[in-house]
Image 1 (cartoon, chains in turn green, blue):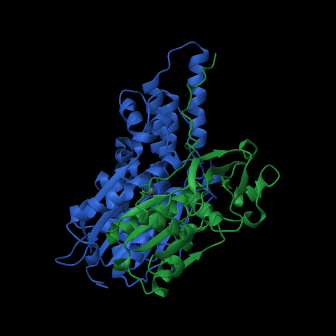
Image 2 (image 1 turned 120 degrees about the vertical axis):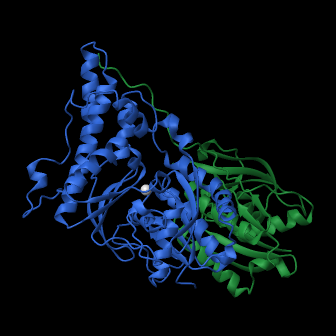
Image 3 (image 1 turned 180 degrees about the vertical axis):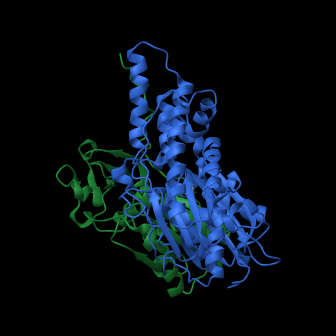
Amino acid sequence: MLILAIDTSAVASAALVSDDVPEGVVASFSTEDTRSHAEVLAPGIEEMLASADVTGEDIDALVVGVGPGPFTGLRSGIATARTLAFVWGKPLHGLVSLDAVALEVAESTAAVPEFLVVTDARRKEVYWARYTLEDGRLPRLEDGPHVSFAADLPDLPAFGAGAGLYAGALDCHPEFAQEQPDALFLGQFALARLAAGNGLLDSTPLYLRESDAQVPGPRKRAL
Amino acid sequence: MNRSQPLVLGIESSCDETGVGIVRGTTLLTNTVSSSMDEHVRFGGVIPEIASRAHLDAFVPTLEQALADAGVTLDEVDAIAVTSGPGLAGALMVGVCAAKALAVATGKPLYAINHLVAHVGVGLLDGQDNAGGSRQNGTAPQLPENLGALLVSGGHTEILKINSITDDVVLLGSTIDDAAGEAYDKVARILGLGYPGGPAIDKVARTGNPKSIRFPRGLSQPKYMGTTEEPGKHRYDWSFSGLKTAVARCVEQFEARGEEIPVADIAAAFQEAVVDIISSKAVLACREHGIKDVLLGGGVAANSRLRELTSQRCASAGIRLHVPPLNLCTDNGAMVAALGAQLVMAGVEPSGIRFAPDSSMPVTSVSLPA
Ligand SMILES: [Zn+2]
């Protein structure tokens, strides 16, 4: 099974993963930048497909990180994934973007039985979720994702760029202090879940915040 | 690529309409629009984040509908065109990302197009005889020479001179603050008339006396206007924020005196001030730039008084006014496709998929270079 995974919840990244190749990795790319997704994502995907000699025909399914993440960036990945899936006539699944970091933690020597994944939500807040880990299993999302102040999070080891940003308030693991959700791990997570017969989400974005719009109150009368 | 009668799919997402239009050369095949206007009503204006969320969910269904309506497949499409600016940044981003994905998935060339110039593009569609295009037996419609465009909507207010729709468009004047449609929305809120303000004020104004109150005409003083020989800095520009404040003051004065607010009169006087200054400055710009034909575009083109006064003043200045059907005046994908087809036919190279949307894209940039 060949999956095209896309995530723009923080940086822009995409990956081709398959259960037919070692470690599942066919090709991948990611940017450092968190603000130019609309420019870099489509060319990145196009070059990745070309370099792997893969066309839409060859792809069995698409997976997209549905956040949480800053709205405009998050939408670029979802708009891209939905359109590709529509044109190619392939199924599209969603995954919580934080799952990518959780899987990365699970596969590292830093793994602990219970931990938080934390990313930057801007406006002095973080997106976070709590995961548990059992030997030989995929990380399990126990609580979240939520958006809160770093100081209000449970007291657990914290992984991800959001933890690095608020290292004073959180028990941040130094090796993961800059880690962002990456489509490569998202794709691997999806492959593993599908292989285990587990379902995935749809591509509805997890905004977690309402738009800032205020319903205007009645006009003040001049008296 | 078929450059004589290209099949072009156009995508629009610069404000609150998700539009997908398809044209073949100058023939309109479909103009499919999904609007999030209802979601903005309780806020009294377009909320960018709400519009962006709606674009994301509306895009694929609108695309699917457009292809079905036009009876074409993506395989047959020669080129894709998308609004890359000006407009709301987050809203533009959704259409641009979707258009790029469409280009990647289909391998079709992509044109990044100026929204304002696209409003003029509808004048080139067949069957729009009243939209400025003329047709000589069997040849494609051509825009008249010395063409101007007056664009008035909730997002923009501009007067353009179109020397060549594919590569030479000049901005003669524009609003320096609120768009005219925005002023309508704000004043409708002050008067408790609801959203969108344009139709609400237009309706109430018919029963009011426009001469009962005199509201200011922004940027009409000699220091802004100058003379024909020495034009002032804002000779063809508009400003509507002072007008909105004047209406608020006026309402407060009636309230302070404990009098009933003459809503219809205020609406009529406000509308007269807007329409008077828009049409007089537009006609002045046309006269001084040898413009003989003017195309009216944007949602406020639906306003009965704007059409009436503008056509009157154009007529007395010897200028022909062209008003396309309203569904082509408001934001839509067909206008983007129409301009895209012109670019293809003129041999302009596509923009590729690396460009960034530009929320303040100038009209001098009709399409983005690769
Ligand atoms: Zn417009």
